[in-house]
Image (spheres, rainbow, N blue to C red):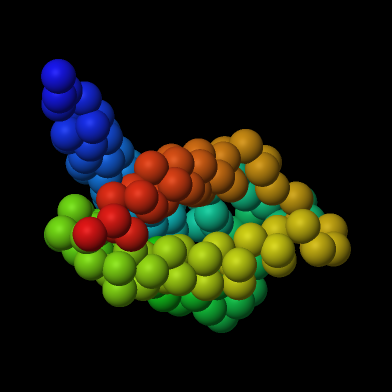
Amino acid sequence: MTTNHPVADEQEEQVQIESQLRNGALLMALAGIAFVGYGVVFLVMNFVGDGFELGVSTLDGMTSAELDPTVAYYISHLHVATAAFIISTGIAITGLSWYGVRQRLTWAWTTAIVTAVVGLALALPMHWTGNAFSHDWVTHLGPIYLATIVFIVGVVLSYRGVHTA
């Protein structure tokens, strides 16, 4: 008597892999959208907030209005540029994840990971060196840490799907 258990088990495993791939790609894309959202908040805070980043209210007790106007404008200039790169990185991660990872494109999966890692590896350590200014790390970095955790879960979930033919 023959059974179809090996075929059924293989089909069930393939369905599980497909589900993990889809859910992983979705989480990676949602993290990319969160990066875009953080960048937009960063940009908005520059123009309608206190002139500093999310979670930063003063620089050594000085508000943006108390700074030399040239310095304040330069800080604003850097905030806009930083927001632009956070937003564009989020767009890239979202597109690579939603369109490339779901199609099992290893290059898209790898590029999304490298893009996120490079951005975070360069930006985050500076927040923990020196005490030149104080920031509320929960509001300043919490959203990025949360998006990063979601992204990592998506990467792990999608791994088998991307690497299984």
